[in-house]
Length: 447
Image (cartoon, rainbow, N blue to C red; front, side):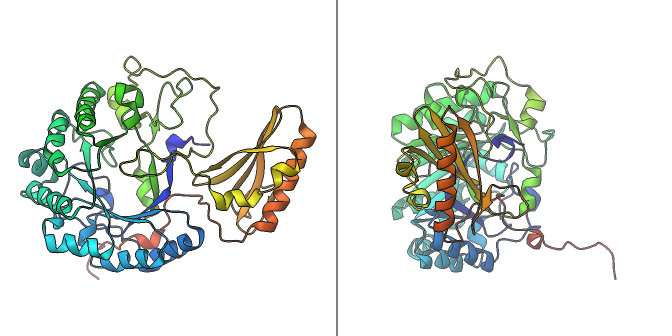
């Protein structure tokens, strides 16, 4: 079984990203959706309505984020925002955008009035020369900065994102200087992921010997300014005093499933030795191919518990700008499925662990424990039993009280079966859109 490093985990269970288009008026040299640009379709209105209706029932997601391509070019964007807001099931609606169209204050104000309250704006250079070279579009820097200024004037939740590559790695602190007058809630730095160019023929993958010190320098400025910082795809141990900024998590994404065919996998030489390997992806394979395992540079934090290869990924909180990574919630709807089981069996329900694929209940009785695990119903997969929503099994049996643990499992299975209302959602995959999301390309011949 692939570890979470091969399945794009860990996840932010409360956030849903919806890809609404695959068109853009920039042509960033490192674009991770470049392969799908003008090939994949955005998510259809029917698919969106289904996802929104599911959330209205389950209240699974707190936030919906619309992205692309460039999301502000989508002619149905306001319709999609209206669908999300009308459901009443999302606390926040976010756009992930290059910000260029937001240089038009009328558009920015219209989006705010429509209910978009969070904006995640890409800015990959500190000046026009750097940004326009990366985007391959003259004027893109000036437009993005005007867009950021308009959002700051409107008082929305503003965040920025900078993709780190060889073209800007020496200027990350200067990006902070450019953005800080607009007082963003958060600045994020994502190390470049090669989605097509695994051999890095474009020479965009920067070595950690350059990336790590420049990221730390930028995070130092951010901390002094009171701005929240986040870093993805740079090993946690290379962030030094800024390790709390590390965040390799991603939300659930409604996107063409084939998009992930080219997604790079990750690994770390010290996975079994490091305390943080559950949430730190390590290095992506193209990086390892080019620069090696960095065994002399990485400094794993010694583990305080035995290493167990993860089966389902890990809950790592929710995206709450300005508040840091939120703690795991109590998940009351899921806890209610087994309410009463523990006291009836003189046991304790010590954890409810919710990931994209599973919900597990950890029961403890003295020195003994067992996990009862729910996964999405699949009649073709092995299971102890099935309910309308779930396959149920148990695992991690530990301690001497086997008869008592068996009693707990029987009680939990019976109780979940009685209380499962049907329609509680656990996903078996991340992408939710199949072959219908691909556009037909011309055959190149005359008929």
